Length: 308
Image 1 (cartoon, rainbow, N blue to C red):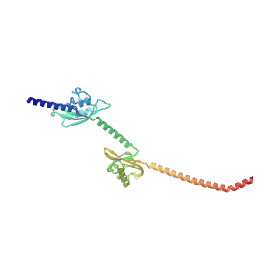
Image 2: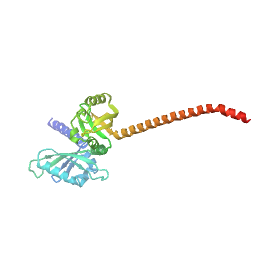
Image 3: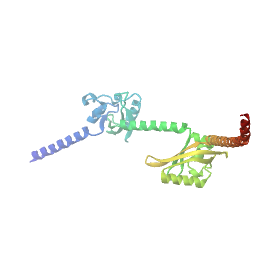
Image 4: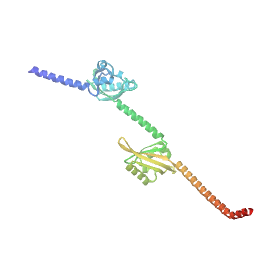
């Protein structure tokens, strides 16, 4: 009976060990056991896939050899903190297997073994974060392009919180157009900016934006900091940024365009006036000619008759 119990216990242990081995090897995260010098003692199958090497070829090799030159120092600093401390440490490094298309990994490690022991090990979990890093880089690149366009745009741009109307950003062109500093705009509501001197109209614009999500005014009067009036085209729309509604206001100075338009209209009106005057003069002259012609007709007829 005792042997049977021992055999059952042994079978249970072996089954548990097999389950543990499967969980260890087929976990979605790479698991490594390293010495304080970074030598690999144990690794699961996911870890071998990350390093693209067979397990037998990884044991007793240095983990740092698989890292890029730029990130290897960060790894050794991470390993030193793990082995000398008692807290979980984190680190991000790049693998060297493809320089043209680098793979990035996130490391989390903690020490195993007695404090100050020469045999202290680092138990390390490794997660492939390449897709996350690529997304972050793409987002950073997109933000850089947006910021470049934002700062070099030849229109004034205001960014507002769609719920409160508070200004969160303003570009250089609008700062120079209106003569206010960047700080004069930030944190204020649209109708609190002196340039938008018609408070009720500014509030009405904001309410219309909240309701419709888009407004356009082709001729809106503003005032610069030194009191100089300007005319602007004002186009605004609402969009989502990180699930939060913001308002972008594009403000274009049309003062010169409006002045030229008014000058052209005046010139056109003057031309029409002169054409009208000349038309009246021509009509008057033609009427006089016709009158003279009628007066001369009998005399011409009499002279022709006598000549015959």
